[in-house]
Length: 456
Image (cartoon, rainbow, N blue to C red; front, side):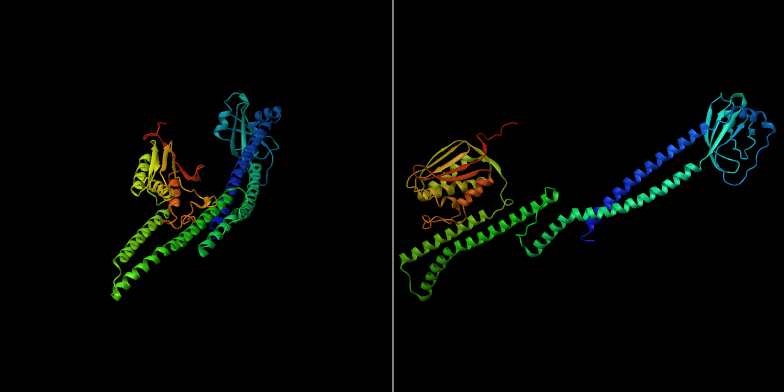
């Protein structure tokens, strides 16, 4: 059964557990009852004590007393006889049944008085009995017997009762097990339906109602968190594609216009002014560079957690110095103070993040950019106009650009790349307006001031 296999296994498990428990209880109970009956029979045999005078009389008249013959019919009650050291049986006059004598009984006649032997035996009519042979000293031994049918009859009745109880218990356990399985697996069935619904419809907004704090509730919460994360990832992917398409449209349109002008000039034979043609080619080159930068930024942002390069321990101050050198080649003026700091992360990603901060600062700063690295905290300070307060919550959003920066080169992905690179290294980044003007960017990264980790 595709849907009922787990339920069937759970029901079978409960039934088997109860059946084993019932069987164990029945076996122990039967053994205890049998032992009590057996010991009770032995105690009853010990109480079979005929009158001593009668025993002596039976012993003296033993030779005149003929051996009884087996008789039919039912017999209930004790039987006793005296046996001599020669194996001769001596019965009381009113008794018509005798106990079969075994060599072990004859051996008891030679033991001291009151020494006894208990064994399984038979009467002369073939009935099974429990026999106790007690030494009488020089007068032989007294043999007493009680029927065992009381034990076996009681045990038979007990076994039948236990079997009946076991069958009823197993049937009840199967019914209860089925009810337990249905109740326990009801949340699992809801979860299964939700998963099948999502698989068929791709509706990631589906949620499962959660009740309680058990394992099923935890599984449901985890599933809801997973679908929410998938839905968020899907939405971010759609937003990234939409934003990328919007950002790519402008440079592509400009490229197409410039290339159309160049082609029309060639096709019509009307040569462009050399200066105008040079400006068109410079614009085309700049637009290609802008497209390349945008595509590179998009590729970096599209990396998932499993796509990133392995982290290594490296000198972060050297990475910052390399980013400063690249920014200075682009015309930035940087004043730096860097202390040694070693971090675990991706050097290329963090260098790109620092360079983005320097490029942003260079766009707005009329003078030098102050860079300081101390105890794992990197600050980049410019002396520009700062960021309007209403724009501050959006600075790390993808493709977001303030109104004052829309006329400047860039795609609006620089700070988003900074945020991603710093988070991958386990750090944090913040932007705020400095009290005396400009923007202060702060990156905090966990690490060490030495290249060797401390000994544990």
